Length: 215
Length: 215
DNA sequence: GTCTATAGTGAGATAGAC
DNA sequence: GTCTATCTCACTATAGAC
Image 1 (cartoon, helix red, strand yellow):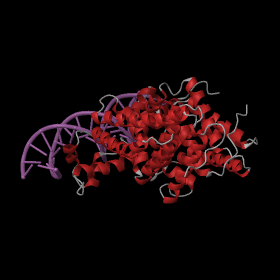
Image 2: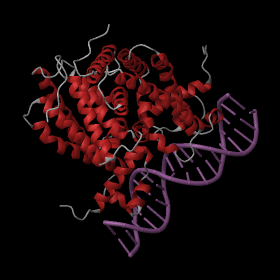
Image 3: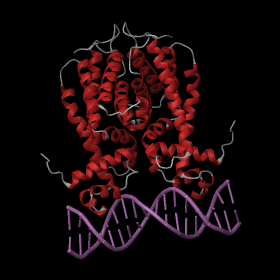
Image 4: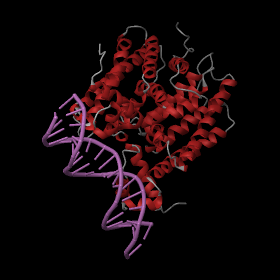
C-alpha cells in the first residue's frame, strides 16, 4: 500500500520535519511548499489552513505510536513485563523517526495556539493521546494492585515515563552534548532502552529488592 | 534590593511569561510592549533585538536555578543525600516560577534559531547550563564510584532527571489532565518531590535493596 | 526614555486562469 | 491540481521629534 505517495502525504512529511524543528509559528507555508516543490497556494487545496495541516501532522505522529503500543497495552502478561515492552516500543518508535519526539514534546506547548478555534483533527489527536495514557495508567495500577510495584502515584509515574522517554529523544544538541555523541545511533538507542528499564523497573519494584531481568 | 523594578526588568518579566507560553517565534514585540505599557519602539532602547531580549530572559532563568543549585552541588555530603537535595531544589525552583520549566524546555528547541548569529548572552546561558550538568554528573559519578548507586550510565541518568523534572512542570494542560488537578498546587508539588525521590533513589540504589528514607 | 511614523519584509489566505 | 496575482495584516527594526 501507498507505493506512490500523494501530494498530500508529501506535504505532511515535509511539514512534520519542519514543525518538529521549528515549531508551529516558526514554520512558514512558503518553506513547506518550496521543499515539496509546489506553489504556496497549492497547499490550500489539500488543507484548509496551516492549523489544520499541523493538527493532521500531529495526529499522524500520535497514531503511529498508538498503533505500536496497542498490542502492548492490550496484552495480559504481568505488569512488569508489559512495562518493559512499553519502554522498548516507545524508545524504538521515537528512535526510528527522529522527528516524532520533538513534534510531540512541542505539541504540549502549542495546544494553546488552537484554543480559540480548534480544528477537528486536534480533537482526534487528543483522543488518541488520552487512550495511550489510560492504557499506561491501567498497566501501572495493576502492578501496584498486585503488589509487584511500590505504592507509587500512578499519574506521577506516567509523567516521569513520558518525561524520561520523550524528552530524551527531543533533547537535540543539549542531549548530544550530555551523551557525548549522537542521540539516534544504534548504540545510544540500545543504551537508552536499557537505562530506562533499569531505572523504572528498579525504581518501581516493591520493597524487598530490585527486580531481576525477566529474560 | 531591587525594590523598584526598572523598565528593563519589567520588559524581561513580561517577555519571560510570553516566551514561555508561546515560544520565540510565537511572540511579537508588539504584545510585549503593550503588556508592559510601552510603545513597541521603546523596547529597542533597552535591547538591541528580539533575539537579545530572548537570550537575556533565558540566561536570567537559568541563573536563578544555578544560584539555588550551587550550594547543593558544592556540598560534601554523601551522593544520595545530595541527589535528594538536588531534586528538592529543582522541583521547588520550577514550582515557584511556573514559567521557568516551559521556558527552559522550549529553549532546547529554539537554539537552532540563533545558530547563525548567536547573541553573546546565549553563550553565557550555555555556560551556565554546562556547569549545572557537570555538577550533576559529578554527583552521580561519585555515587557510582562509591558503590551507593548501581552502575548506571551517568549521562543517561542526567537525561532522565532533567526529563522527569523539567517536563513535568512544563506539561501544562496535558499534565493537569494526567494528574487530575493543577500542577503547581502545594500538594501536587510535594507529591512530585516525593515521587521523584522515590523513583530515583530506589531506581539508582545499588543491588541489595531499596534505599530507605534518610530523614 | 518614550513617542509617532514608517520602512521593508514576509506571513496566511483568496480569486480565478489554465 | 497547480499556477500567478493579490489582499490584508503583522512583524522586526529604524529615524527622528519631544
